[in-house]
Structure formats: C-alpha cells, structure tokens
Length: 191
Ligand SMILES: Nc1nc2c(ncn2[C@@H]2O[C@H](COP(=O)(O)OP(=O)(O)OP(=O)(O)O)[C@@H](O)[C@H]2O)c(=O)[nH]1
Ligand SMILES: [Mg+2]
Image (cartoon, rainbow, N blue to C red; front, side):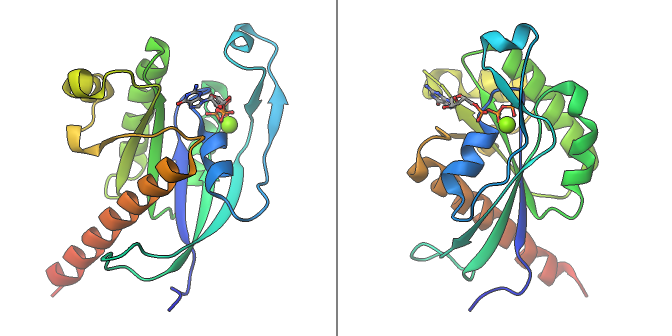
C-alpha cells in the first residue's frame, strides 16, 4: 500500500560533498537541478554548484523485514555554499528526515559539515538525521574522531559513495528505518 503524502527527505552538506550526485543516483524522476558555473577559488574542487535546489523523486519498496510500507520519496538537495544558506531553512520546512553528506578526505568539508549539522539540528531538532561519509579511507580507525569532529553520535555515521546506487539505497533504507522507529515511539508516547 502506498502512503498518501510523499515522504520529504532533504539532502544537505558542504560544497562538493556529493548532494546533487546522491539525488541523481536515487531519483527515478527526471531531476530538476539549478547548477551554475563557479568562478571563484572553489573551481579547483569542481566547476559548477547548486544555487537553489535539486529535486528528484523515487518509489521505495521496503526491503525484506522492514516494517514500513512502500512509499514515494521526494528528494530535495540543498546548495552547499554558505552564501546560499538561506535556502536551507526553506528546504528544511516540513521535512520528514535528512542526510548530511561529507567528504572525509577534505578537512574543510568536515569543518563546514559540522556547521551544517549544527544548523539543521537547530532548524529541526526532532527530525531523524543520517550523516553520510564519502571518500572515507579508514572507517574503522577514524569513526569516533570523525563523529566528534562533526558533532554527531557515532551511530549516525554511515559510509556512502553517492555515485553508487546500492550505497545510496542502503542509506535511504536506514533513514526510513529510523523515521519509522521514531514515529512508532511517538505513537506509543501519545496518550
Ligand atoms: N571518487 C569519488 N568521487 C566522489 C565521491 N563522492 C562524490 N564524488 C564526486 O564528487 C563530485 C560531487 O559533486 P556534486 O554532486 O555536484 O556535489 P554537491 O554536494 O551537489 O555540490 P554543491 O551543490 O556545489 O555544494 C561529483 O563529481 C562526484 O562524482 C566518492 O566517494 N568518490
Ligand atoms: Mg549540488
């Protein structure tokens, strides 16, 4: 059975972490993107950037044993550059869950991701979050350090290459599991 309203998931993170890639990898719908050329020093990382949002959509079937029903998921990628941060609040409105992508191989990506983790925790303190780490050469050795650097619990970290459909789908399933568990807990807590 399909849930009635699409589930809204926001994909955020610093410049060049792979947000647009993640939305494109997962989306079955044609992705609407707002890429513009970059002309400043960041052009050494990549030559275009998201200036407003990426939008895609996917029908998600639960994997075997998952308690949640099939659903439509709307994916909303944010810009990563600080100067477009005003979009974060708009995109975060009414979201059901979000992922923060971070490129572990670049120190400035980790530093910026920490700010974004904190900003989104302020915008949506009760919304489930997953932190997806790409280019992570030593997940075992650096797990606790990376979690501390990002200001997030170790359990919220997950390795993910946003170019890889299997990785991206697994991350989406973990987030949907977390969202389901939270909604069940809230149901039981409500008198
Ligand atoms: N080798 C490698 N490349 C990656 C990995 N993750 C992302 N990339 C590449 O990094 C680039 C990320 O670009 P985007 O998806 O545009 O990044 P973004 O986060 O949307 O960037 P902005 O919107 O500008 O903030 C792409 O060229 C990806 O192919 C990874 O795990 N390994
Ligand atoms: Mg982008």
